[in-house]
Length: 203
Image (cartoon, rainbow, N blue to C red; front, side):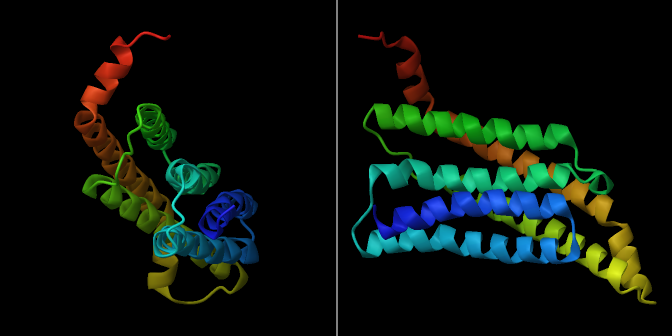
C-alpha cells in the first residue's frame, strides 16, 4: 500500500476519533477533536501531494480519498447534531449526507465507465465552507468548555458562547445549501454519464 493511501485511511480513522471526542464534550476532548480535525484537514492535502510527487496515484486513492473527506465531514456534523444546545438542524445534516453519498455513487459510476471525476471549483468551495464551518463550531465548543472551567467577567466572551447555538445553526444551514448547490452542479456536468448508466443493459 502506498504512503498516500495509508494517510487516506488514517484520515478515516481520525474521523471516528473526532466523532467520539466531540460526542464526549469534555474540555480536553473538544480540544483534542480540534487538533485532530486540523491534522485530518492537513492530511487531505498531504496525501494528494505525496501521490502526485511520487507518481503513486492509484484507483483506490482516487475513490477512497474523496470518500475519506466525506466521512470526516459527516462524522463531525453528526457529532455536532448530538449536542442539543448547538441546535443543529437535522434536515441540514441530512442534505449534506444525501449530497455526499449521491456524488460518491456518481464517482463509482464514472469509474465503472473508465472515467475519473475531477475536482471542480464548486466542489473545492464546498469543502472549504464545510471545513471552515466545522472549525468555527468546534472552536465555539472549546470556548464553552473553557468557560465552564474558568468563568470570566468578559461580556463579549460569554455573549459569544451564549450565541453558539444560533451561530452553529446558521453555519450548518449555509454549509448544507452550498453542499447541495455544488452537488447539483456535479450532477448537471455529468448528466450524460447518468443517462448512459440508466439506459445501458447489464450483460
